[in-house]
Image 1 (cartoon, rainbow, N blue to C red):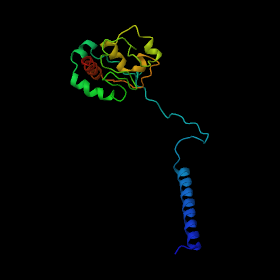
Image 2: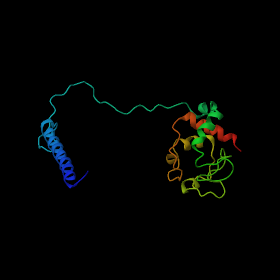
Image 3: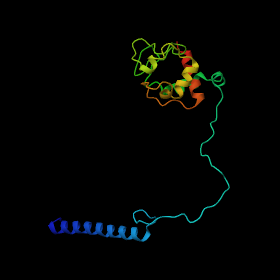
Length: 174
C-alpha cells in the first residue's frame, strides 16, 4: 500500500505546504506590519492632551486595618483550626518535630526553644524573646520579613483574621 513513490509524494506535499505557509506569513508581515521596530523610522507622538493635572500618583494609599487587639478579640478557634491545615504539612501538634518545630504550647513559649530542632540563625538570635500573640501575628504575616534568613519557606497569611484565628487555635494547644 505504501511504497516509495507514495512516501515521496507525501513528503513533497508536507514540504510544499510549509513553503506556502512561510511565504504567506512573510507577505502578511510585510503588508500589515505596525510600528517602526527594525525599520529605522522614528515614531513621534501625534498630539498631547493637557489635563491640567500636575502629577498622577499610581500608589494606592496604605489602608491600616483594625489593630491586633480588636482582631484577636474576635478570633474564632474553629476557623483557626481550619486555617491551620495549611501548617500541618510542616508542623505537628503532638510534641514531635517535623520539617518545622512542633507548635503545641507555642503561644508565649520562648523563641527557638523546641529541644532538638535546628533553628535558623535568625530565630536563634531572637531566643531571648517569646512568641507572644503579637509576635506570632507579625511572623505569620510574612515570616521572611519578620525574621530575614529564616528557614521557613511559607509565604505567610495575608488576612489579619486568619492569623488571629490560627493564633487563638494555637493558644488552646498545650
